[in-house]
Length: 551
Image (cartoon, rainbow, N blue to C red; front, side, top):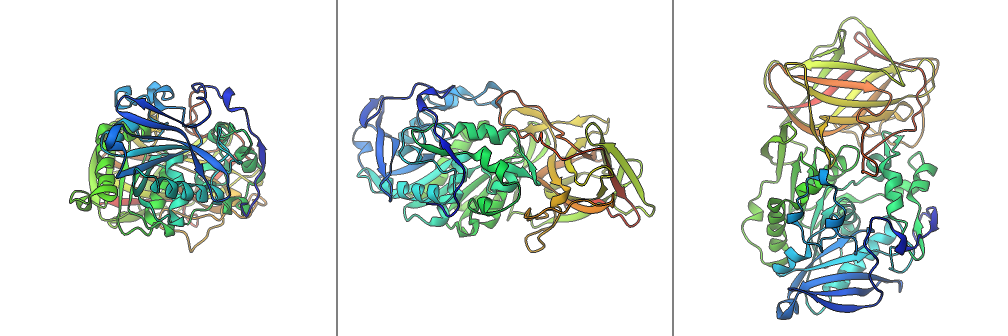
């Protein structure tokens, strides 16, 4: 059993799941699908005797009988629920890129089997018809994935090498199992996945996320047994405690060759965590690609698939010369949605980024020098906002994490929730839109959040542009006195031309708050705000944005 016991709930009948195809028949069987042989409901025994089920795709005939590396697709979304049935048109995924067999956010068996791979799509413990109770990440799921990797490597058709690839959940599980060091896990390809449950998934700056988390909790309830009630657990643990510690990922213990892919466009979910996983992993052979596109479309692009194939061919089949010659870091510098330049670097964070302070000033501006005279701006926390602009006197690239230091007070409350957006404003005063999540093209440069009572910092874990808040206790505001808060703003990369402006917006609610029904989009509807917010700057109040300039 896990060291921490989460809140559990009875599973919901798997046959009743909406927006899924009918649940296939029970029992193991083999079937031929064109050039593929499929082992349906292949039983996978785990170390404690529980049995889970996988669908394994192989080339038909003699090509599928031996010497096959395996790609493992692991998620609770149902091995019978396939991508051509669930992607929204606004995602940009071209249906011609996928076969009908493609698991949601995972590798397409039709493509990979044609190049001599097996693809295993697994229903984890306690999901759908797999045995046991479902524990949402944590030590049980990590060990189960370990056992499954070794089971697949031991099959008669296997060459003993297993790799993992996929988006979101299929990336996060890699951070969980890789530190356990399964002998047969030879290569990782986490493609946009959060790596800090508290700070990236559930509590942005200590503010509860109320849009995606309950939706995600619903998607993992289909089981013959019990499943973890993630939404109930999140609400029961507003501060960082043993529950969140049970979800911690020892990223420094990842040693396998790894091809990380992150995006600037997934603020509120995956951007920060993928970059942190790359930075902290101990792999000596690792590469990072960062894009600014729609995440699912980018994963399934033919060019992206070709890059994955080169990576897995090198580490699961025969080493070549191409992958070792890749730049360690490749990233897009965005001009606007759909317009970016590709650059390379030796490491992340960029070694040549120079952090500079942009001080808040009167007239809703920012400057490189602090204002001598103190000033203030206030807004209604329910409906107002404050904004500050910095105009560039030459072409500039800003790439990396940023932080916003504010001196704030809430005269009518003992706490305050602060929401921050950075925007790019053209010389003509128009807002420039950027790709945002998997659907939108009018998003911000970057976002940040902080609940003022969570303002305590851990100096040992803080970095320039990335303050680290332990979130273990609250420090309420008192007597309307101003306090200093450091707000982490998630990483981005943006090009500004001379005459264009960087705008900082601060308010008491979500700045980007749309999202069609059922779309995975971060929201924060339960705030602690009341009355006015006051921001002080100038004189003794060194409110400023710390930004990474790349020359």
